Amino acid sequence: MDALEIARWQFGITTVYHFMMVPLTIGLGLVVAVIQTLWYRTGKIEYLRMTKFWGKLFLINFIMGVATGIVQEFQFGMAWSEYSRFVGDIFGAPLALEALLAFFVESTFLGLWIFGWKQLKRSVHLACLWIAVIGSLFSAYFIIVANSWMQHPVGVEMVNGRPVMTDAWAVFTNNTALVAVPHTLFGALGVAGAFLLGIAWYHLWRRRHDGIDSVDADGRAIPGEANIPGRDKADYKVWINSLRIGAVVAMISFAGTAFTGDLQGKLMFEQQPMKMAAAEAACHDGTGFSVLSVGNVGSKNCNDIVAVIEVPGILSFLAKGDFSTEVKGVNSLLDEYKAKYGTHLPNDPLYGDRAGQEIQYVPVMEVTYWGFRMMIGFGGIAAFAALLALWVTRRGVVPQSKWIMRLAVFGILAPFGANAAGWIFTEMGRQPFVVAPNPDASGIDQVFMFTAAAVSPGVSAAELITSLVVLASIYAVLLVVEVRLLVKYARGGVASAMPELAEARHGGEKEKKDDDGGTPGAPGAPRQPGDTDDVLAFAY
Image (cartoon, rainbow, N blue to C red):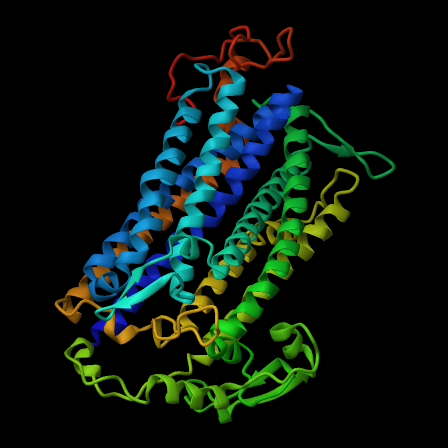
């Protein structure tokens, strides 16, 4: 067993799992804040219901994200101590700001939002959510600043073999981070958009299936009511509005990720040319973009790869913005990397058994090539589905087909796949470096670290395999808990997030507005049979 490989598997598994929660938390938080703003401005009951329903799912995901994210920081010290020593002077600032400022603000004001439905004025309550959401955006920014420094080291100088920060402004305005941040945020919105669309489609289908809604002669929806808490005409508005908001958000997200992804790709061609050449299976210099390439799985020889379908000029456009500039391929770059950074790892105790081994500068091309295409493909599928959903539901009706409904629900996974594939490509494509060197003039070329030197020297393979099995098992249990909770409350509809609906109906009264357009649950609104003084009611 190889301690380095096990440590990489452990960090990869826990990070990808954690990142399943991150984009949904960021994207859904923004959407819920916008929806609550609509309720604040209009007083319409459907927006209140939407806020509470999607807010409940947001909270479930947020809590699971916090629980799984804590493990990441422990791994830095336990499995990657040499890496932590190397990057510590730079990472200290952004990670401290993320934990002590951004996350503190985020969690504090989210707590006020959870417990303040009846205790705070509506304007203050809404402000708490927006502050929490803005805190999550800053949290993402600080994390991406740290990660982007690994991709493109700036603002430092080498002192006794370690980088020391000399320009904090350069670190926090790293051009790699300034492009990666909006790219990540648009990706998060894509996850939220598909989430709204799929669940809303399911509930609209259920209403038709249960005979609550019908269709007129022109094919338009006729909302109905059932003798079930929450299954009224306002419930129909909840789902049709959620579907349309989700579809619009998904399409905007794809446009944003495409634009920022193009900028990010051009930076990668400059800063990490080997990663992008491997992503395109571009073994030789040229201008052609590979639509489909095949080769021997696991082969380390780039010459084993054959381009089956190639479009001339597109690779040049992705790299340089024109259609004629020749882009260096893997073979040319390999010679440059060997000349700059050596052909073998140094004979240093830091590298353990790997000292003196030949360096594999070409990343696993199956991962980079297909990861790049899965990222784009899943994102495109989600955007096309959103456009199609807007067209199909233009009259407020979803088809009665159960299979189409199931496709809409499973479509929720597409942007999750795009986000995961993008991060796997970004991190694995950087190998064999954990901190990548910079061949372009805007970076500091001699600041880099081989992954083989980053693992903790005092941790054995047996210890790492034990922690890997334990963490993977715990995360598997947490995955079951997360999915079951989300499915339970998603299937339960608005009534699952607003038990007061059932209590109000049981008491013989319906929701009603007060004189100033307020709604039950708002400060100053008349008390309803479903009202409770328990501040934990929403958190339940």
